[in-house]
Amino acid sequence: GTACDVTDPAAVQAAVAAVAAHFGGLDIVVSNAGAAWTGPMATLADADLRASFELNFFAHQSVAQAALAVFRAQDRPQDGGSPVLGGQLLFNVSKQALNPGPNFGAYGISKAALLALVRQYALEEGEAGVRVNAINADRIRSGLLDDTMIKERSAARGLSEELYMAGNLLGAEVRASDVADAFVALALMQRTTGAVLTVDGGNVAAMVR
Ligand SMILES: NC(=O)c1ccc[n+]([C@@H]2O[C@H](COP(=O)([O-])OP(=O)(O)OC[C@H]3O[C@@H](n4cnc5c(N)ncnc54)[C@H](O)[C@@H]3O)[C@@H](O)[C@H]2O)c1
Image (cartoon, rainbow, N blue to C red; front, side, top):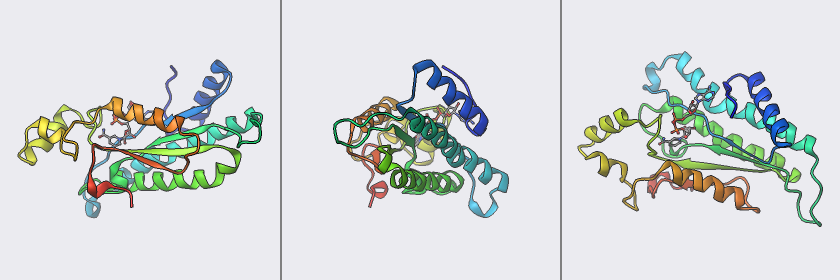
């Protein structure tokens, strides 16, 4: 592993270079880092909105640029007439990008911009054989949705923590491992680009339309 602050483009470039040197190249990047700044838009500190965009949007742009530079430098050979498999970019978006919740504007708006970035890269890099896709997850137990937040949110809805976490069409908690499995599935879908795959147990309001 190598640590870096993804909001620092030079650090991202150094990390990508270290990875490429260690593994002899770069095939798939999962750009995963993110955090939620909260508060109503009307009184949200400008600094919070900008910080959210730095991490949830610009950092992903830095990762994508650094990865694409390596994909191009690799100059992989054509495989018998089918499109060049020129590398993959995968991004962790959020249901907030499609189904915004109150007081999550800073997060949701930057994630919506990230979803637009995914589509833009898919559009511009398809010809190079680079596939660009995203996951749209919701309510995953993690550092972002930690035990304290789960307690607060379930109490606010008058639900047990178990029922709150299983509040979806399948009635089952969605795990971080489900998100990881979805990234692997996207990585294997060789003719899919510009897609957002929902991993939330089913939520009509967050369905892509
Ligand atoms: N938990 C959910 O319900 C949920 C739902 C939808 C999307 N997501 C997204 O999933 C992704 C992962 O979040 P998570 O839920 O696992 O939360 P998490 O807090 O456990 O993980 C976020 C990770 O991002 C890293 N990070 C934050 N700022 C960074 C920086 N400047 N440089 C490098 N790394 C940095 C943190 O160290 C942490 O490891 C995020 O993009 C988040 O928006 C989470």
